[in-house]
Amino acid sequence: MFRSFLAALTSFAAVATSASADNHPFPFHIAGLSPVWVQVTDNAKDGCWTNIGEVKTYAVDQLSLLGVETVDNAKANSVYRIIVNGSRRVDGCYGTITFQVNDWVSWHDNRAFVILHTASWSVAGYDKFNDDALNFTKEYTNEFFGILPKE
Picture 1 (cartoon, one colour):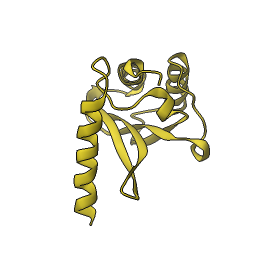
Picture 2 (cartoon, rainbow, N blue to C red):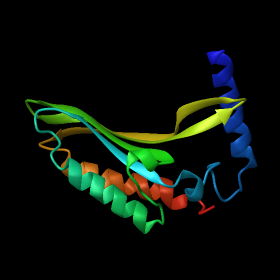
Picture 3 (cartoon, one colour):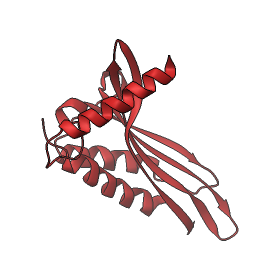
């Protein structure tokens, strides 16, 4: 049954993508994703990432500028996840900064929480990921949410 559900989701995504407007490569829009919960996951060790709160605030501010409503998790329609993994080696910190947009989808009376979009960057050799986390947050937020239609 699970394979059938995944196959159905894949078919749904293909149909939704082909049905979307030519100017919008994604089958979803800001009104459908809002309100959004910004969730930050710190899996960086050894002091490789220290501006966690600043990155979350920055993401919320960027979304607001794009007209995306943000709320706490209990009231969210979708989740914008920022996940930082990494650890320190002799010559600096190494890891990844990953962004995901998750939402609930329904298909034939089945509901699943799925990743609608994801992007990831590798970072290496820095003392901290702080600047990269801010820069990639701005880049991903504007490139993903910035091109979505309002409705």
